[in-house]
Length: 246
Ligand code: GLN
Image: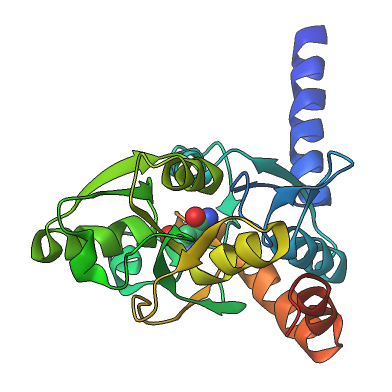
C-alpha cells in the first residue's frame, strides 16, 4: 500500500513538473564573436545569448544554455541531450533535407575565406597547393569542400573558430573559411592580423535556432513568436546595435 502511494506521488510529481514550465536545454558554440563568447567577467554573452534571453522572457520559458562547440551541439541535439541549438546556425536546404528543423531567421550571414594580413593571396586560385582550415560541421567547411578540387587545396578540420585563426596566423594553414561577420568582428574589434579575401563570399543565408526532432515544435513555436515580438518592440534592434557597429 505504502509502495503504491509512493509511486502515485512520484508520478504526480513528474507530471506536475512537466506541466508547470518548459525548461529547454539549448547548446551553442564556444567562441563565435559577436554571437557567443565569454566576456572579461567570464560570462557567456553575445547576440545569440541576448536574443535567446529576450525571447524566453517574452514567452515565459526557462532554459539552460551550454557552450559546447558547434559540432558537439549537433551531436547533443541529435542524441536528445539538448532540445535545440542557437549557434549562428545557417538555414540551408541541405540541412533541411537531412532533418534539421529551423526557426524563422534572425540574421543574414555569408561565409568567406580569410588569410594572414600580409599574405599574398588574392583569390581562390592562390590557394592552390595550400592547407585550408575549416570548422567541423559548418557551412564554411561545406563551402570549402565544394571548392577544394577545383582550386587544388586540402582542408584541415578544427573544432572552433579561434583554433582556425591560430593555424592561419601561425602559418600552419594558408586560409580559413568562416562566417564573414565573425571574421570582421575578430579583425576589427580584436585587431586579429588577418584579412578577408575579396570576392570569396558565398550567398548570405539566415541564422536560425535549429532542432532535430518534430517533438521540439513547441520550442520552435515559442521562439518564433518571441522573435516576432522582440523585432516589433525594438529589443531585437537594440541587441544587434549593442554588438555590431554599422
Ligand atoms: N553559420 C555557420 C554554420 O551554420 C557557422 C556556425 C558556427 O560556426 N557557429 O555552419
